[in-house]
Image 1: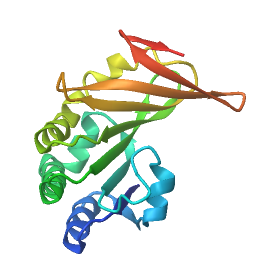
Image 2 (image 1 turned 135 degrees about the vertical axis):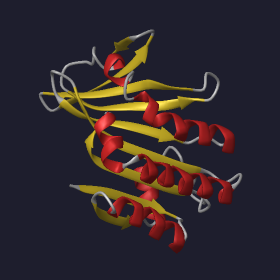
Image 3 (image 1 turned 120 degrees about the horizontal axis):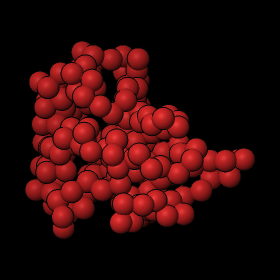
Image 4 (image 1 turned 90 degrees about the vertical axis):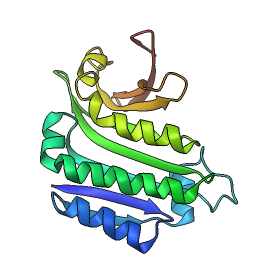
Length: 189
């Protein structure tokens, strides 16, 4: 099982710490992104001259549940969160984008669950990071009514409510991708 570790604008020390922590549990496929890679992956986040952004993406090959955090171990998970918080502190007012991807599963299908942290304030960024593992009990309930053939679900951290919220689901049927937005407990397409 391999974790994909993609990044842009990390120091060598930060890269090595994250890599070492991940390597204790998984094999790691590491990819240092160029600015052009970033511009193509995150066009909504970057301006043509925004070289100051830091980007971290961790794609875990396991389901988002309690077993995941037992596998990683609480100590390693806390260390990963700690180094990411340090990165945000180092950047201060510069943008830091952190994306965690996990496997999801309902009775209908396997899909990816994405947690994206793009908050500008250090405090909100830290709270969002701290709350991820506490979602393992609520996510199955929130995703129990997914649209058919869902391939990906996106969660965003809402700074006003200090909560992770399901935001968007993508499904594919007959080579057509449909997008759904989560509103008032329902997926609307």
